[in-house]
Image 1 (spheres, helix red, strand yellow):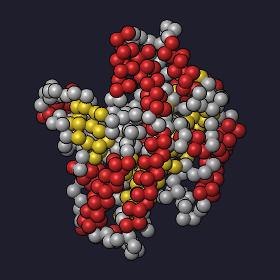
Image 2: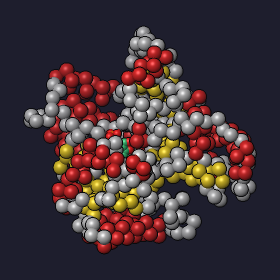
Image 3: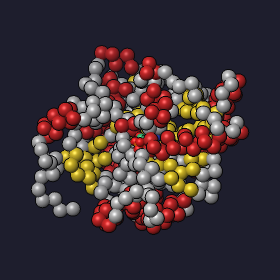
Image 4: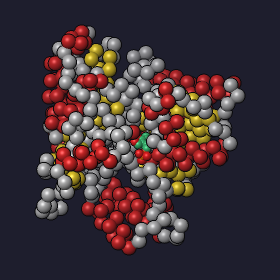
Length: 461
Ligand SMILES: Cc1ncc(COP(=O)(O)O)c(C=O)c1O
């Protein structure tokens, strides 16, 4: 794109003043004490008001890269022609629905296009209740499913921080199947055992609810856990839990807002990782854009890219883990990766402040990252799908350098020596102001929902 003049309308300080004056205070900003003013995006890069270029490692909303020309053209052309609601016959709607469902298992054959991930999950909840005539829902601890009243009730990540942390009677919270720091861990159990143990926890909840005169109408879960800390589900977890829920007369809702459209590099949808079988207002413009996004995913082989570059990143991060005592765990698949920081390997004390510091240092290195997880100590990596090998190597080199800095401040030594090194932590305060911690709940996605036989999949498109 040819940029000729400055892209800001008012000076940065004035933008900030107006934001404080007119935008609700609970709309969080990244890097609160020194927020970025971003005026342009292209591919995997974002640019501030004076043209400084940032490598975007977290914006999974711009799935095929910021302002992809094919997507922009499709949206602009349709906007110039017609923009209205979905109460008229329109070719875009039906042709896209047909194309999208070709990526689903056979049982999933009908689409509802809505405006956001929250709306998709809310609709999925309504459909589940209408179908089962049962009100109650099982959710996972630390889960986030949206910002509406209904979806906040489904999100321990949110409701534990408001209303005195009270949950609704119709919500039942199952343990997060985290093999690193959960109820059952991979130091005691094999992956297969973890899948079974954690799914048994869901079975227990179903039975408990039943014994208390309640019935489970739905189980909602992300196919890979995002806000909860970038966690891959253990093998057979979904297969087992889905069976228990269905046997009890409930339906299963796969929240694919963050995991869908090929991000894992292996499959189009996250739930397919487990061998188990979302969505938008449906107006002509959104659909033209959604269709162009699928074109780009296919034509530019972005799933293959996610697989190749993601595998390289995971390998490189494992290598960093062998040298950096502050890395407790590395996990993920494709372009869905988490790096959990701890100040002590044996106690797994969350490196929350350290993660904030790392995020802030990344920004100084022109790289945008953020954190996830119950303790805000998981570095989240979810870049646009055009992220390339060169970007990956640059990211790893910078992370390597920043981690040495943090470890130096903490007095941590090379991880070839056993760790019980967090003692110096108290004396050495990292200068972080928690500002890096903005998790996905503050991201905004365009999402939606479909209903199929007994699975509904809120995804973003
Ligand atoms: C897993 C998950 N579900 C639902 C949502 C809500 O999507 P939206 O912000 O489009 O309402 C989000 C957004 O962060 C999400 O991460």
